[in-house]
Image 1 (tube, one colour):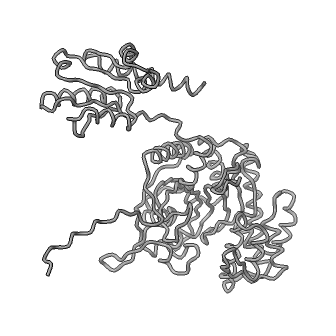
Image 2 (tube, one colour; image 1 turned 30 degrees about the vertical axis):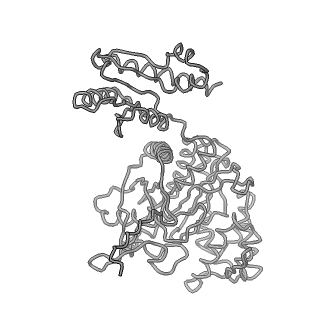
Image 3 (spheres, one colour; image 1 turned 60 degrees about the vertical axis):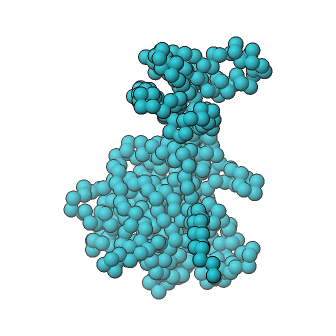
Amino acid sequence: MNDKQKKPQKLKARLPRGFVDRTAGDIRAVNEMTAKIREVYEHYGFDPLETPLFEYTDALGKFLPDSDRPNEGVFSLQDDDEQWMSMRYDLTAPLARHVAENFNEIQLPYRTYRAGYVFRNEKPGPGRFRQFMQFDADTVGAPGVQADAEMCMMMADTLEALGIKRGDYVIRVNNRKVLDGVLEAIGLGGDDKAGQRLNVLRAIDKLDKFGPEGVALLLGSGRKDESGDFTKGAGLDKEQIDKVLFFVGITDYAESAVRLAGLVAGTARGGEGVEELNFIAALVTSAGYGPDRIKIDPSVVRGLEYYTGPVYEAELTFDVTNEKGEKVVFGSVGGGGRYDGLVSRFMGQPVPATGFSIGVSRLMTALKNLGKLGASEVIEPVLVTVMDGDVEAMGRYQKMTQELRAAGIRAEMFQGNWKKFGNQLKYADRRGCPVAIIQGGDERAEGVVQIKDLIEGKRLSGEIEDNASWREARVAQETAPEADLVAKVREILAAQAEDRKRAANA
């Protein structure tokens, strides 16, 4: 019998499906982008708020799309007191809970913004993740649609602050009351038709994806996709489908306003919704935001059930090339609307609210396509190399590193195996370090350092053909007194920056 113990199996490093690691470049790009968004929100008078990743599951409510059960679509666990908690699905439901819990201390209208990760327990796919970042702004306690108009204007200003020029985006606005009026006018009013109404909303929300023909199938008996999967339809007849398609097919609101008013005539919510749309259109036009920036568009639905009035969506209108090499319009990067019932669930009294959410990851992809991210330079650290490992030498190297950092220069002392000096320069090359500081025993005795311009050295190495030429081209490395270290490094970094600027303008 073999008494030898089995060798323990090596743990396999693997990332859960639907999640991604973020690298330094992505993190810096997000930080750059969110700083610009934050600046616009602050200028509008909004203040930051942070809520935890977990909420009690019942606080998230029944407002999750494509779900009849409160814990479907979310990651949930049971606390030690047997209460169910879930990771937040969006940033709006936690805000509603926060407002209700602190209602007596909050000054209304309450204007706040939040950025953070949200989690969806859904099947992941290309571009569809289970964890992603949103950046929201909300006004709670403002009943008038002027608050919705302001949200749309703020979103337009945000996109322009991010470098998206006018003509490359549009904020599209609709009103769920108008849609409710249309649905009531075709016989889908009342609580008993709530399920059918939700199916109609989901069908309309697919307009960009499937076109009018595909939506007509989803409004009717159903639609079969290329794989053979069948989606059951909302069960409307042809006359009902035609009226819904007319509504969502309106491209010029002014031209169709009279016919739309006739369609919702006799429905109180429909008439109220048309008035609110007209009011928003007048407000944004007066403020200088014409239809090239903010446009009334009845095809905007927004899938969540909690919207009660105006809904809006930020859409980028420029073309990008997809994975198949096809030119496609980039599409939506955020949206929101009025949700007057969400805070009221906790309060037993009406609390009006409206808000907007930006999909940070999707917007970042768009900005990368436009070359609007990563423009700010990130200079890799100056490397202080290590020639000797005794306490005195190490103390000198660390002192140099700290002097560079104190002067605002990014720097690091080599922390690997210092005995193989060639590996230190290889590390500097792979890291992209602009400068290396070298001091051996002889230099230390003289109180000097060798300062190596690694960028210039790399350029020269491509031009030099023999040792004689190399000896003549020692400008990439110079000796300087220790006291002049910071000044000399600054001088080299400034010259490198000027070279990059000239190259960019060439």
